[in-house]
Image 1 (cartoon, rainbow, N blue to C red):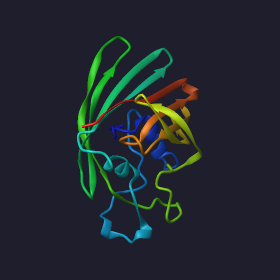
Image 2 (image 1 turned 120 degrees about the vertical axis):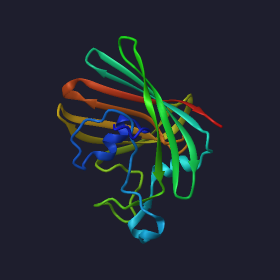
Image 3 (image 1 turned 30 degrees about the vertical axis):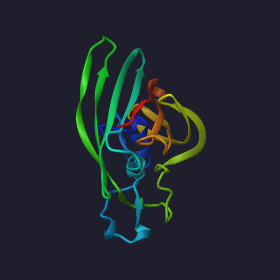
Length: 210
């Protein structure tokens, strides 16, 4: 996704659904409530803390998580494993470095280019949301709930959201599960394009403490 890495294909759909996005996601992005802004630039009623910042800021630099996505498109299967390393946490942002291999059906393995993302602490309140908004609710979500899921070998209570979107092949449906107990928040995702018989599933498979 011009990779916004960490939060899987699901998170991009959750972030862009209802915002006019029309292209299909292709990697892991972040859920963003709005553009980051300096804390002092807006009154409290017009800004909100970024959930992605909060989901990293409580952990120590050096924390590493691994998220695996499997894309099934007809007979074609592609597996992507991405690691996220927390490099720095300040009062302004959390810096996360990403990278990992992409495995193709014929056995070839390619490394994704590593990059560093900065999840800024403050964001503008999204248009159309109440003040104060629910910063964790993705734009366009039409259903939500809670359930226990397994993430990296541990059972956590996760909040899930469903969002519908659209790509050239037709309607998309995304469900993603989040927990503040794991670094980065995302524990599971399922993204489908029914008309194209395409499914992308993602799972948090490992957490390494510094």
